[in-house]
Length: 244
Ligand SMILES: *Cc1c(COP(=O)(O)O)cnc(C)c1O
Image 1 (cartoon, rainbow, N blue to C red):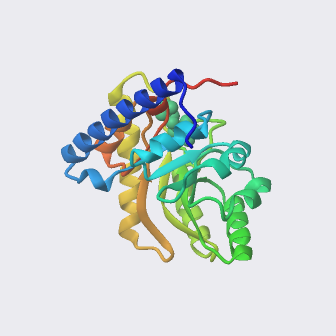
Image 2 (image 1 turned 90 degrees about the vertical axis):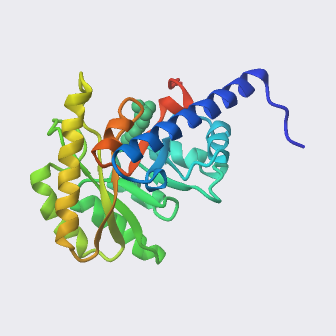
């Protein structure tokens, strides 16, 4: 028998349901405003600090992708995710010595920003007899101490990655700087979209630009208007994060 939910849990389920409905409606509107279909946009739920019971509730509402940003946390929750119809992505900073633990468990690694990291993902994937989908992360705000390859170094990383047989580049990801205004952040999103289109038009071997992953709780609408087709939303779906 299903365990009866506490009132507190039930309230949280209801909140997540209402948030999900609002977010999918906003996504649909932003997609239409930018000449696309709502189904062209993937909502990925950023699930850091969220307990699996709530993640699985969100999945039951129709979520197609979830993403964790810490290897340890992902592994500790891994057996509890309901992944029958939903993809698990890795979206955080990744050290090469942790790659082994992720490969084979995730559908996509969105945060690849060096040939060293791409090479290790490729090597571990080959050992498992699989090809791992990756996105290249771009540091579009050129911020110091931030993950992501600088825009001017992206061509070289693309070229180097294209020759690896254990990974397949499926697009780009970015986390722009914190901005005061929507106009300011949209400039970064527009810049990312331009890079995305430029690379697409080059038709490089073993590189496909299927996904442009950008936009979070505060700015996913703007990101979609600029051309994102994957948004990563956490707190707007699950509520404010509680770090334990
Ligand atoms: C946490 C996280 C998000 C979502 O952040 P929210 O502001 O809560 O929507 C998106 N992308 C990455 C890489 C994250 O770590």
